[in-house]
Image 1 (cartoon, helix red, strand yellow):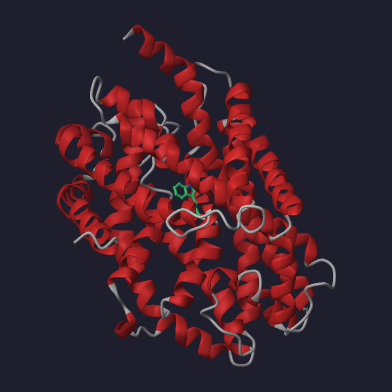
Image 2: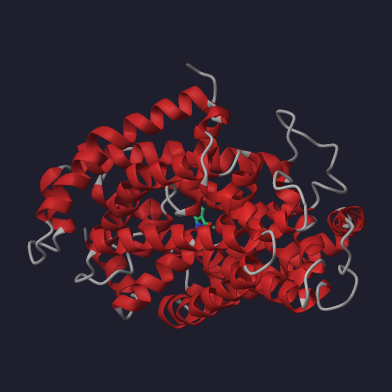
Length: 457
Ligand code: TRP
């Protein structure tokens, strides 16, 4: 007990200072490559609007309750992903959820830093003339040259790690909160600019129709698994990221309101990214179903087709990199906070170990298009394996157990005490609604989609 209160005391210096800061940091975690790279890619390859509808259903019925539950678990325990469960369920095995979460953070960061590295490379590349071509064969060759070059792949990944690591080093208030408060509004304005440009192109309507007219005939179980995996990934849930941030929440923060705002704003930003991309893709006759290369092969060709394309291309990649920062620092914080609390390290030591270990694990993903291209597990390269296993397996499994913990183990009275800030908020109806979903609906849905998607049932 004495040990716990000491750990708690060392945590009290680490809090988000304002309600707005909490919202920005949390939204900054949610908004990232998930919105600007994964969402358009998956929407493009899964038939457009029908996929978006299924995604929205997952975000509301699974995403919102899991996010709120994580934030409450974090705030009530004031612990990182592992420590939270150790404090809330001492002597029990629930902390394994958090351990799985730390593992997931490593896997996600391994490929995430690589993609962010490509984006950073593209910010510079798009300032020159090298990408200014409407021929996808040329942009494809340029992208291929980048990802098969081990030196540039590792180099940009490590630069990205240093940038995001510097923010983590500065701490919760001066690092995470201060950075996201400045970056998020900038990201929004830039994205708006590109969307307006895309929408005002002749032929934009076809892209909008693709985004907003559903065709459910192409939907399969696999589509649903992808949509659910995307919801977990995009909302930063299922691995304790929201527990880690929740630990820094003020006691008077209205958690269900915050979680709802984050889910809705994150959706709005994804749609805005879709509006920035698809009308332009259609206007110039490119293929919407290009897959992961959409961002790096199709997009440059699309921008090269439009007036002032060079400028908009720089803006586009800059905003994508900015979006990736808020997400990456939340993933880094999961690892750093865990290390600090578990091994009693200071911020510097925690950050350093996080960065070094990520540079090592990350290089498996960074080299999976060059030196390690032939090394596969289950037929996937490290890059694809980390991506698939984290979103479609680890996060849903984590989410399943988090809802079980919050809905059944933790139980009604503690859940309601947290959701109403010990009775000072009148959240009764919202609370009842969320608790019922957390208990009966989310875990069942997650389990069915997971087992069906993995062809286990
Ligand atoms: N949500 C972020 C994105 O869309 C990625 C991310 C940040 C994340 N923290 C996470 C994904 C925790 C899963 C779990 O880019």
